[in-house]
Amino acid sequence: MVDPILLDILACPACRADVHLQEGWLKCQNPGCALQYPVRDGIPVMLVDQAQPYS
Image (cartoon, rainbow, N blue to C red; front, side):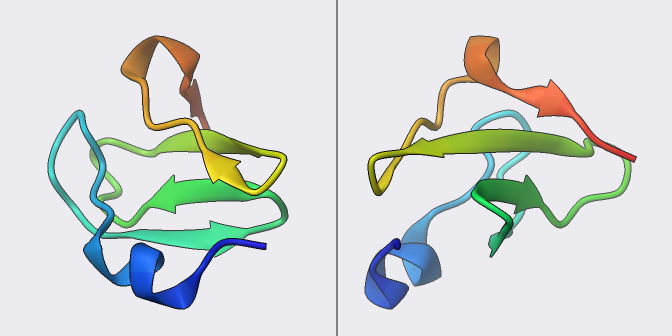
């Protein structure tokens, strides 16, 4: 879905923590931030205003 090389360099735009791909979302690894970013047609949408919190 998302190129693994791209995943290695992507970071959460809100807190700069690493992200990982899970069920069509890129999820921030920082539990204090806890935002997830959608992946649409294989393209990560790394915009804070498009992010959703997850638990």
